[in-house]
Image 1 (cartoon, rainbow, N blue to C red):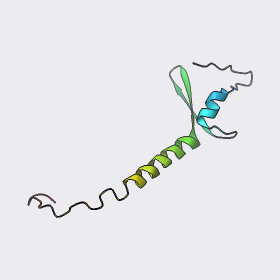
Image 2 (image 1 turned 90 degrees about the horizontal axis):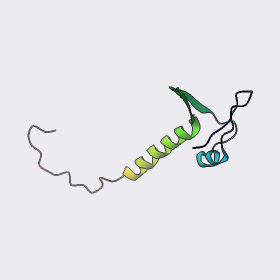
Image 3 (image 1 turned 135 degrees about the vertical axis):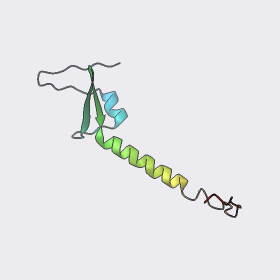
Image 4 (image 1 turned 90 degrees about the vertical axis):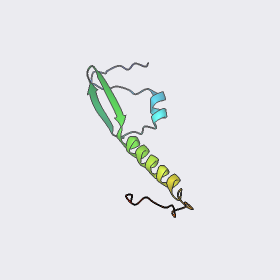
Length: 80
């Protein structure tokens, strides 16, 4: 666990290790939320980009995965 200090202007410094790990950039927007007695900061840009990258990767991996599947299987009358 790391600690930070609140300065008189109500500013805090994010530890370098976290900045590097999350690839934070100056001017980047953070979402701030209060959960009972704690504060949570989440980088907006990286969350959105990560989700978009995951979706793109999953779609690319899934592309063509049914190629060559046998669709001539006899179906039951009550099935579509």
